[in-house]
Length: 478
Picture: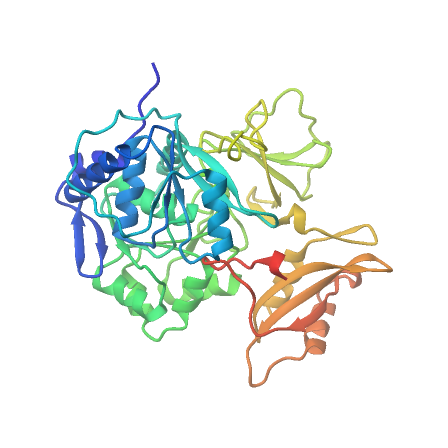
C-alpha cells in the first residue's frame, strides 16, 4: 500500500493552531483558520473535478492563492500555477497544454467544507510548473507530493537551520514560480512558521513590512536585495533579519558585499531549477560568507560534473558513481554539466515524462559549473548559451561578470550573434548609469584589460533589459 502524501497545513494546524500562518495587509490568518479554508477549497474542487484533473491557479501572491494551492493538493488534483500577468498567448498555451479542467482566478465563492476526498498518495502528481528555459514554448515540469516534501527534508538537515518554526518569513517572490511556491510558501507551512505576503514588490513598502512584522527571514532574488540597499532606512529595517536567502538568478558580488557590510550578515546563495523543486545547492552547506559560489549540494542531493562525452569531472562526497560512468583522469577546475539525482527531482515534462531522469535517476540540468579549490561549485553558464568563436568556447557569464564590475554598469546580457569570419561573436546589451554614462568604447577598453581578445564583445547600450517577473533576463527576447 502506498504511503499517503504529507499535508503540511493540517500538520501545522495540529501543532500550532493559533500561530499566525499568513499576514496580508491587515488580514491575519492562523493555521487553524487556514486549515478550515483549505478543507472547504478541497471539497469544492473535488465536487467539480476528478482525481488527477488539472486545476489552474491564476492568482497573485495572496492568501487566496495559498488556500487554493493547498486545497488542490488536499483534493488529490494537480495544480497548475499561472502567472496572471503573463501575455495572453502564454497563458492560453499553459491552459491548453495542461488540459486544465478548472481555472481559479479570484472570483470563486467557496461554500463551507463538504465531504473531503481521499488522501492522495505521496507519489501522485501534485503540480505542473511551467518553465521555458532558454528557448521554446513553456513546458510543464511534473513534480509529485514527495518531491515537494523532499526538498524541505533536505533543507532541514542543514545546521544552523535556514528556516525554523519561530521565523517570520517575507514572501515577495511570486507563487507561480517554484522558488516562491515551495522555498517560500512551502517552507512556511512545513515549519508552521509565519509568512508575510507582499503581492507586488516595492523596496520601501517591503522594508516597512519587514519592520512592522519583525521579519526574520527574507526569501529574495537579486533585484530585491539591490533595491533594498538603495533605500535610506535599509540598515535599520534589516537589523532583525537573521537569514537572507537569494536564488533564481546570479547575485552580483558587490551587492553581496554591500549587504554584508550594512547588516553584518551574509546573503545565503542558492542554486536550483523548477525541475528540482527547486533547491539543489547552497552556500549554507559550505561557507556562508563566500561570494561567487553556489555552495555545495543539499544533503540527499547527488551531483556530478560531466563532460559531453559522459566522463565525470567531479562529484560531491555523497554521490555514488555508477560503474558505467567513465571518470576523467584529471578534473582540475575544468567546467562540466551539472547532473543531479535525488528525491526532489521531477519525473519529466508533461504529459509523457519526456526528457526526465535516466534509468539510473540522473538528470542533466543544462547548466555548466566547476568545483574550486575548496570543493565549492561555481556556476559558469547554460549549455545553450555557449558561444563558439573560431571553435573556442566563450561563456557569456564570464563577460557579464567583467562588465557588471564597471562602476557605471547596472545590467548586462551577453548573447552570441552570427559572424561570417569566426562563426559567432559575443555581443553585450548593457544598461548604465547616466551623468556621465560610459560609452561603448569605454566599456570595450574595460573588457580588453580583463578578457582574451577572442572573448571581447561588441557593446550596445540599451534603456532596459527584458526580464521575467522574478528578475531573470529573457535572453531569447534579445
